[in-house]
Amino acid sequence: MQSVNRLRPSNDINLQGELSRLIADRQQQIATGKRIDKPSEDPAAWSQISNIAKSQANIGAWLRNIDRAQSIANQAEDAITQISTQLTRVNELLVQASSGTVSSESRNIIALEIEHIGATLSDIFSKDDSYGERLFPDNTPLSIPIDNDISVAAAPAISQFPDLVATVANIASTIRTGDESQRAAMLTVLRAQSDDLASLLGQQGVTGKQLDDVQAQLQNRQIDFAEYRSALEDTDLTQAIADMQKLLVNLEAAQATFARIEQSSLFDLLR
Image (cartoon, rainbow, N blue to C red; front, top):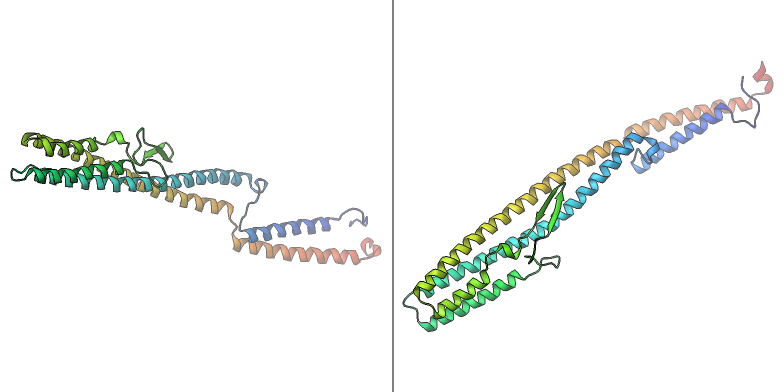
């Protein structure tokens, strides 16, 4: 029998309250695009979303590190290429100076150009990267983390280069005062160091390729995580709108039923 005690909420009032709450929930989901707003709504999904969010944050940090490493690596590759070009010119000048037909005055002019190249090399070795740090550090290169248990040195240390500045200075001095055998010996040293530099340039290319590969892998993982998180967290708008429409119909029916009951007399309820 329907209670006539108006101080105690009826089942109909409770039903209307629950339907109104569910409608508000659906409206919130539609407005925000999120199916889950707090852990209590779906504890298991919330836990997975939290773990995904941590993974996404890590990937974001690694990708930013890769951007920095790529910038440094590209600068280092350009610098090493410039050094290689300068050494090629030194080789040409040394061969030219080794000719028996070159006068001492011409050798002095050649030596001056080589000394200028030595100064250019010093400038390249002492330049900063775009972040204000030494491009080729004196000590161990900065190791940049780019993934779980993966770090990379974006540029080599000075110690990994042959002592080119000293070699170029010795070549200039030998051109001025040395004999043919001494110039030939310096040519052998220069070519060996040029080979070492070519190897270092190749290693720099490998570093750039590694950065590109890891970046592509992280970007794919980023897409996968975003899709999985969306499936857990985002609102299915079509379903949410359909659910809300059903709830509205049920609420209208509950309100109509409650209105009829309220309008009924005690005699009607008892007969």
